[in-house]
Length: 328
Image (cartoon, rainbow, N blue to C red):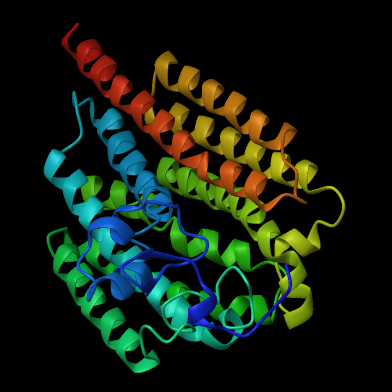
């Protein structure tokens, strides 16, 4: 992809003349149904592409449900799952808006991102910061429903969130920092249930970090040409000519850590069967990955929503088995 200056008039239009974002799915609900005045801010929060929200949310739900398995409860607390869902939506939006604010000059020079709200002029940098603060306040109102330990744990993640957008300027491993920040919910879910942390939660978190490095490396291959031109760094450049080997290695390590977390939390065969199915799906991602084809990379990146759903469903099934075993 060739880098170029932002020009909203050149971008595709899907909604009454308002420039759409080039890499958003065609026909998304924001472009079709949202009020015109809201669309730039909804796009800034990535509401037109919910995959990131799912990837942020599932580790939270996994952690809550894994903690309930260890407690022998028949199902996770639905109120807690709902709070994490709201938190994931607003904090993912805040994080994306902040990231776009920090990267606005780079985004204006990259074909895939030049049509985003800030570089295209739909939202001013100052308005974007106000939007970040507003979403963060909503996130804080959600956070205070949890116990004190979880509140403090959530607040402690802000340092990672703040530094992540700058990492691609200094290290070839920004995906590692993203993984550390993006999967904090794998710690918070357990803490929300238990009021403390334990080894299963730490192993779950570590596996999620490695999972994120893998799938975000796939995603980053969409921008390698532009990154080289702009002097930006990523694992997609670090791993050189053999990305499937590296992505596959991170995926295998993630699976092993999830298995260990499940074992220590007292999960049953159904969970390990779910992890095995996830392993097959990850093997498909790696074996069919073509890093020279951006559409191929994007499809495999998005397929990780299925990974999240499969692990969550396996854990839900496991809570029922744990509860039944406790009655026997």
